[in-house]
Length: 190
Image 1 (cartoon, rainbow, N blue to C red):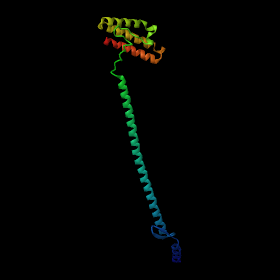
Image 2 (image 1 turned 90 degrees about the vertical axis):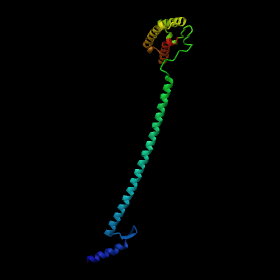
Image 3 (image 1 turned 180 degrees about the vertical axis):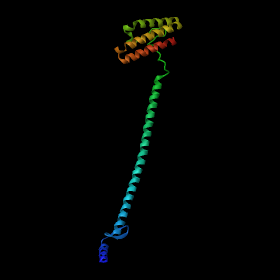
Image 4 (image 1 turned 45 degrees about the vertical axis):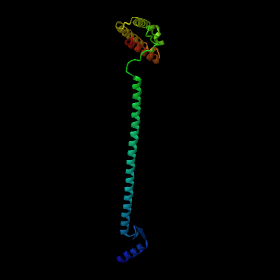
């Protein structure tokens, strides 16, 4: 009886076949299910491998893209820093204050054309003393005795200017300070 049932099931199963990898297997056969499951598993594994390869390929492409992007950004930053440094060095000069123009200091008679900021009454004593020193130095040509007095008076003028810095715009303070520093350095060129 058992044999007859198995035979009947086998005959019915032969009519319900599927084509898997070129082999006709009965659908309800236990061996067919195992083979089908193995084939589907292999297909799934192959799809997973393809996805892993694609993912790996995308990761590598992304890595190199980001590396090139970072190199370009680094090169751009380096170029900007280099240009900034060159601009700084070109404006810095030798580190010495810029010499006064002939309009600001007449080197023949020692007359000083003061900026507006330094014409205030507060700076009158130092201004008067410096005018006298530069005038005398231009007339006599005596540099040695005047140098220390010029430096001392310019330092006093700078201190006063710094003390009154909050009462004036910063641009005026900076230009006045540069003028005094240039005046302080001018004694070497008399």
